[in-house]
Image 1 (cartoon, rainbow, N blue to C red):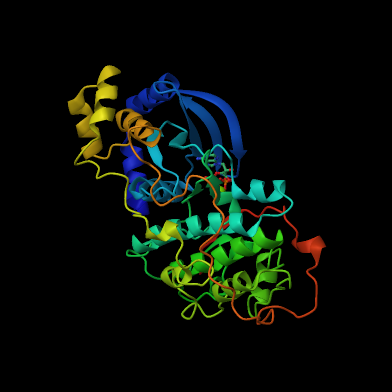
Image 2: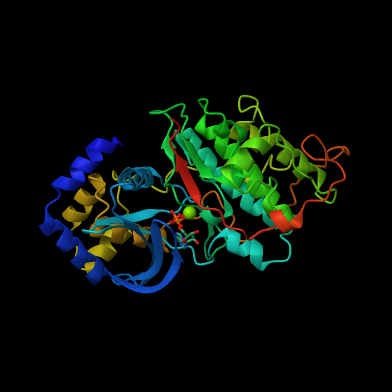
Length: 395
Ligand code: ATP
Ligand code: MG
């Protein structure tokens, strides 16, 4: 993931290859609609023509400024394989764009869902949050920190399975255990990001999970700063209003996640141990990859692809080399939409009432972070103000 080497690899690519990648795109996909247009990326819904399966196409513009960020996202996405993380199927590079062909989440993002509903019931919040915990646990155990956890980057698929996406700001902590670069989305940023000191990127994720939980429960941002400077001042002594109607066990988890000192903030395993989440059956299911690629390709998928005209040797080679080309894409798309493979580990397919909920904590005052008695200023904190992801290199 060295930036300068990445640039070199891109420069050396044969223009002929880029043309053929454009052909692959035209031949294999039919673009149906635009899902989102952002600063650097457009996301389209498309049909994978060979299988008839809908996919998401994330189109990233190749520019000098963001080529390292793009390459970083691609490398990290290639590695990730978890039921609560959007799966990368195919990477296509044309002259102007890099296309990521991704698993499609038909129910859109959590930000849209929060705005759509009057109120998210606790059981639904728990359903979403436990799956977010599963995704973050997998990332942190594999030395990846996301650094931009927010409702826009949490997707929901047709089966109401939650999927973390957008690893554009993610970092491999085994290569960079501490960082000083400011990155993330303002309302979700932890206090230490504003201090120009080294920070542990995984601790940022824990804080932003607290912001997501708070928003699901209240439809408000917990911290009101709208600019970097306002947030910097607010984060010197973070305080947020905890509405008295918030269930006590959720309030207590939010307070824990908003531990100002990152060293004292719980790690992901500590979050799983919290009363509100402890014992979730989602935590006890295996969270490893759905099958051991490339050692043992699924014979039913191999047979189906053979029927489509693929040579089994080419399939094995593409999987073995982790090529993320059209062959591997067809294999993965079939696998992720296959009646022959159980893709449901770690998740309940549908929301179920929270029968295993731990008894509530004894009554506690709504505490620590809140400015007691002051209602939130709705004019400044209500969703849906959208904030962009940001990267600022500290000097
Ligand atoms: P930008 O910051 O330029 O807006 P981005 O890097 O945030 O782009 P993503 O977060 O990956 O891009 O995607 C933007 C939006 O597109 C998401 O918030 C979501 O609404 C939609 N989207 C992304 N991937 C998928 C997917 N796999 N399935 C369904 N919708 C998706
Ligand atoms: Mg995003």
